[in-house]
Figure (tube, rainbow, N blue to C red):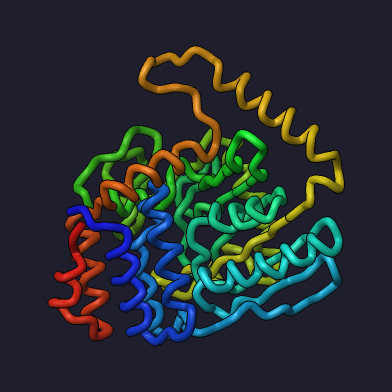
Length: 357
């Protein structure tokens, strides 16, 4: 089915509010999830809402929390999320960091104990809009492992995303690199399972450590594991993200002692945000960035219909298309979404009324 982004925003907002959120929180959560769908990252879109609602109901996700500064050393600080919605904690923490960059030229900030921060690119984009470049390293605690280490046969850590963003120039929009360190995000495996699709080779191993194309392997007992991208290279970045985010935030790492349950997704994040004009003048930044992008995109494509892109291009294309034509939602994801709404008292008639273009 295909639903307009406006209707999805309304539905998500009403379900989050019915689950106990007040003030701006329902809107912030709704906007973040739907914007992920618009960007083409369905793994981090409205399909996450059933997990959120379940975690609210078990007490693992606490509505109406706010970012609290736990350690404050000027341009270096640690923020505690109190297991609140990452869409709120992430926004508030980034706004604190952006203010510090305006004052000091740089901010190194860690976030600990935020519930799922959503698409990390959203926080990088927030920094880019302010005119700053940023780097973000993320790990997960509370949830069982999802990704196998290089040469390993079972899951030991999560998809540990990395994000780097650069501000817009006079002719180019912000550069946004946002990626899991696994071959694909766990949410994309969930989407493939819900659609009844097989996965390409090289993505999954099953519970016995053998290669498989069946996304169900991730949900079996014992569960399978996702592979890191680029063999030891992706593994190395995942490992560094685990330590940067987990150790230096004080939020903890992927050790078994930190596990809570299958619906718990507590994120820690290590971020560096910089005013680039403290390093070099803006004119050079714009000229050199634009020239580099032009040079790279001028490479003749291997396939005529597939031109060379730079990070951020696929998301912008998807956003434009889906704003006009609507957001596709597979049947199983929609069934789970509806169940989550019904479980907090949003009526079937109300859901049906908004399940349209």
